[in-house]
Picture 1 (cartoon, helix red, strand yellow):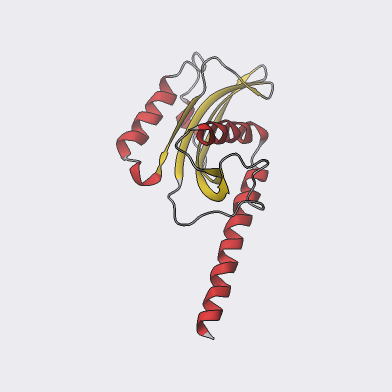
Picture 2 (picture 1 turned 45 degrees about the horizontal axis):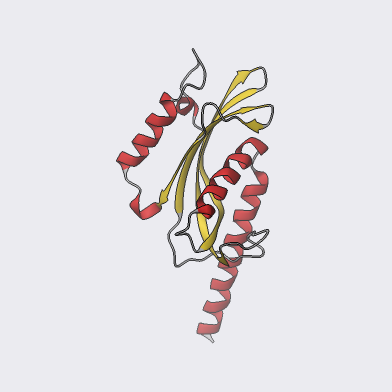
Length: 164
């Protein structure tokens, strides 16, 4: 009986994890969601990736209003592997259960938006790595790269306005 109860609780926890991730993605403002979609598309395009990765949770976000419909965004978030094989159409947490036997991917992305579209200049910076391989040096390198990108003359650093 205790084993059955434990399995029911674990199953409920997995369901809540999946629901939480989907809610977080749907609650993201469009500008951040588009950045996540760019990173997910890039990760899922690698030949070595065998299963679909989906957005799991935001770690930190920041944005600067550049005026005239321009925004400069930084978003750090986790992607989590699913049980769906690569190439699954319309993958989402309701269709593709998250795997708990593989590490998360930690992504940091910075980019310029104009009137709701990610701009190609400066080129969006997407840096994703399996969480166990992420070091403080890599986090520092990521932050420096985003800070050095020529986002806006005379404006504060993008990372200076981080929000959780």
